[in-house]
Length: 408
Image (cartoon, rainbow, N blue to C red):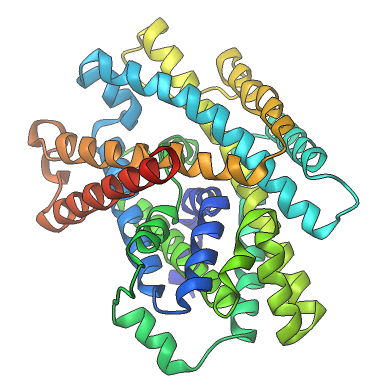
């Protein structure tokens, strides 16, 4: 009993990063893969969760070994052009992702209550997230994210159990990796869609809020992330199981969520449909809430690094002008993109923007975390390096494919 209580006490920031990462990209990638290939690609969700765990663990290990966030490490230890490039990328990524999350939340809520337009629902959700971040700090975010995570996991897993296929096919998809004809790009999509992209950097600020600041806290972080990415992998698997049997044409366009929900309605009745749609909404809104609260840390940290030049890193003040200015930048101006009335197009652009970050993160973790002079005994081991190299290759292929399909 004491061990289980201790484990629960050490879980927090990981659930926040998991709930933030389980958004529109995961839902779309897993739904399309499930609709096209059934349970044959379940293993890809597991592999994606493992890769994201290794990257996030490397980020946490850097911070707990050096006392600086990875972003601070980029500014202090790498050529200046690198951090300035990322700063420009962050501005563009934020605008696109904020608009995409508004559109996705609008689609999710519209599926539940069609009487309100997708665009209006997107605006309402953005303003609600803005208010929640303004009135609360990290402690409120963690409590809300635990509720959303529990809801989305329970609802989606229940839906998966209601329509689960024969056990043999399920185990084959999990334990025997296969690549059906034409599935390579969908495998890359599932792996890349699991668990977020730029939002991984927010984990460093959330563990600071929990006062995890020393090497001795690494075991907490590893347990925290292990639970988070186990749940992330299970979520991706459940979405693919639910989507198996749905016509691929039904998981494209603005009716993507409804296409999956209608299959559940046929199999188990209206209750199954409602459960899935509520779980879908929880996944999207929790992702929005995590981005609204977490990404302003990155901007505020840049401002501090390039203006104050502090020698001793400390927690970001969420009441500060840089943090709140960027929060409003996330929540208000991207509403203009909703006027295009192409919510699915925005979500696809979101996937393109996020894909560019992962190879960059993998390369920097290979370079910075292998230096004994910086990390000492906490530098990368051979297994970690192998996973990181594999991740860079996989995410690099995903970037190439995404760019060629969207702009080629």
